[in-house]
Image 1 (cartoon, rainbow, N blue to C red):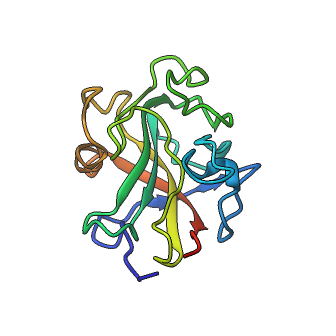
Image 2: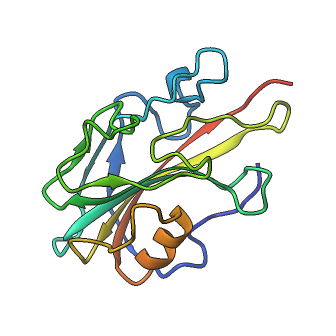
Image 3: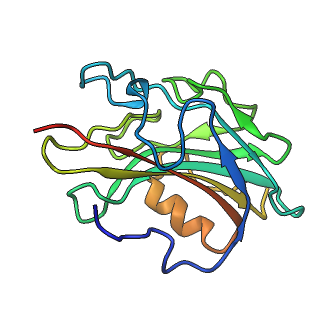
Length: 177
């Protein structure tokens, strides 16, 4: 694991809380949140709940990012945008192929595997532990305005001037050699 912090060079934002009924901050991802290509992996997005966002919040985005992937640019596992400000929870499995449990108006962007869904953890065997930043971004616009085929990197760039706050939960995963 390295010290790469994906938010270190971004403008400061208020902090609020995010929790999960099946992912514990600082602990390993449960197997169901691993990629389906790994034993026990099911590509199921975690349940998330959040609170304490800035009162000016008009929408949320949720991202899952692995800065430790051996790519030079990390790996985006999930990005959901235009979550209404009245929403404070996503159920487990909301990141399926059709986003069946996402609130009205919200949609998923293609991850780095180019699938508009959640893809689970799959660090290369023997590469050591990877961190997975599960982040709820509180935004000052009702719609972030990125097209449905935008990359999560484009989303991050677009959000940089609209982020009021961030709630961050970091989980880990490692694949034995």
